[in-house]
Image (cartoon, rainbow, N blue to C red):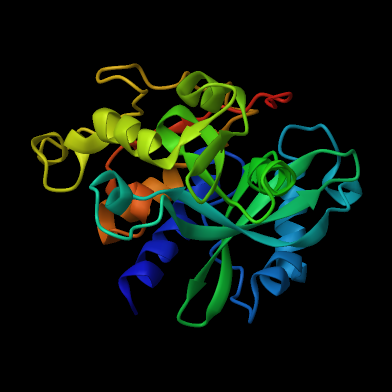
Length: 266
């Protein structure tokens, strides 16, 4: 099994357990499928989604009737190669694919799938549909652009050529409402994260917190557990197998919680 497959297995173990929503084997039991869409819409996944949507009593498990809408989208995260100034490195790299799931009461969730030795497997279920929503928004704002997330400040952008445009309030605070150039964005992330790459003194200390645009900025405040979108699954994998680009930045802790605001749009 390759490193990414090993990490994905750890994602499976940690994801919903740390969310406090489902038993440890809930996602582990989901079999791989030939495509992300098939993995997301498999009967076992839908059953797990029913439990996920029923976890806080908002809807009965038997009445959740979850459905998966549309296809999956690639989810890109800020690349350490870009931060390090590696020639030709894209601003972000694909970490997983996400599909939108909807409950009978209208609530949404994001299904994260990764490719393992046996096919695509759901490794996390997260509250809300940011991944899909921002992919759609980016396509409208800058058609053909690359949508990506800077996880340390929970900022979403779309990039095409030399242009980087913000897709949410956090990104606006970082680069301005009119966006910035790719060169200027690189300079910003180098200032913010260049001394925290793998092999740095920071990384060797084993410190992995959420960092804002300036060194020493506090991590984003977590939302209440019932509404939180938890990302520890990804960081568990990074600590063990070096699974992904943003993970290798060593910028998220195992207790990292992504902020989600219902109306977080520009």
